[in-house]
Length: 183
Length: 330
Image (cartoon, rainbow over all chains, first blue to last red; front, side, top):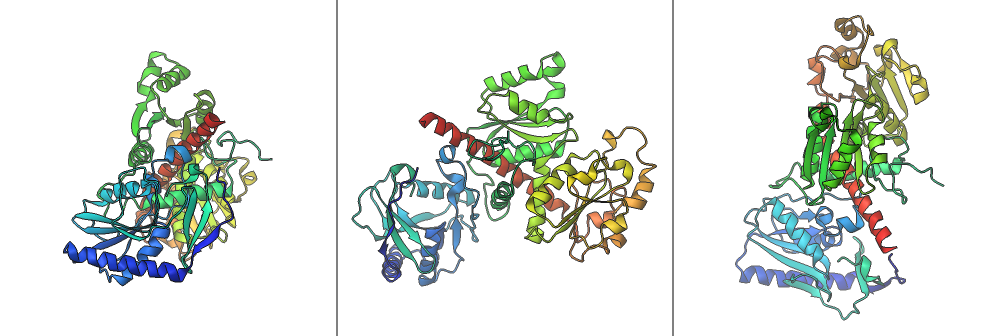
């Protein structure tokens, strides 16, 4: 089903770390402007967690980092079945009334974020959710927007960006049939 | 070429879960991995302890034989996956009015059920239903006669893995009524498939099947000898309701010879875990001190039962959708 052209490196770790620095500054500004003093952070497995780990440290967030695996919340279970290797979600803080920064690597259709928000609400009712993504691509299928974006590169619709890591981090570009794309 | 197993789709995914037989190590490990990730739903600060995976699906518990615990955990597993659950106690429903089993199935199919969870006193009942129901329906065996009880075996495997990590070096002893136990049969298959170093069965001769040795186990009739240096002891329930005739002199005599006590437990490895599928006959299969003691993992087995049943249900219904979709697009 997946027709993958030889993947080529789109961005190296040093440039990715620069983007993460930029995201951290944007986040600080946002928190200041909205008078949020004690936010919590959640990364989406797997790439989002790698980005979130770095942001979590840079922002010196006091609550430990939460991780989310949205496999059980996907809207395509009835089409593609289940992935048996699922790292469980782990939210080591009280979600109720918390300002949450949700982090992922690539935003495209918005379906992952829809699933992630549904799962977060099963833990409690947050005061707010801000979404931060390393890469923003065109192709939204749901009314979902990122509050903080590392980079919005000029890419063709079919170009498929994925983050490999965790060390070194690298953004790889390949081409996928639209069928397999679910970022 | 792979021998075609009735339980699998053409691309080797689980469609029905009827028996451990014919399932390979990878597939058993997949079930354990998925179940492990479902165990996290129970703890943490989750205010909603369920996921929307099987939303809109209908699962019917067809219990031809009573079992409160198994039915409850299947029901809870289905509900944690957001499926709708129908509990049918067949002995008190239409069959007693003369409706045949196949007619009952046809009626349930017409109500658009997606899965049958079947418990029956006859061996092979779940296989029979799987081979006669509509192709879009998955069947899970919740215990058939003295044949098999695969979800119980898998929840035991999950409990063992949580304590021992690797199956390879393990020595596992199964003690008690091997003859009448569908649980033991499924456990022996699962343990051997997962590659433990030794499976022992320990029982009086009257409670051993005549072909015990051919099941890939070492047979012991002496408990002291059998549990020496084992890593895991699985005690079985004495199936009084399945016993006909005088297989045992008395429960008291059985406890003296085969009951697990703290004294005897010292013969096993110091970090041995003690398991029991429940319900325990205290003072018959084991002492209360052992059942409630530090080596006992009996209550963990119960929680793991929900996770294993969630894993099996979502794998069966997920694979079905995938192969159906392939047929549609082909």
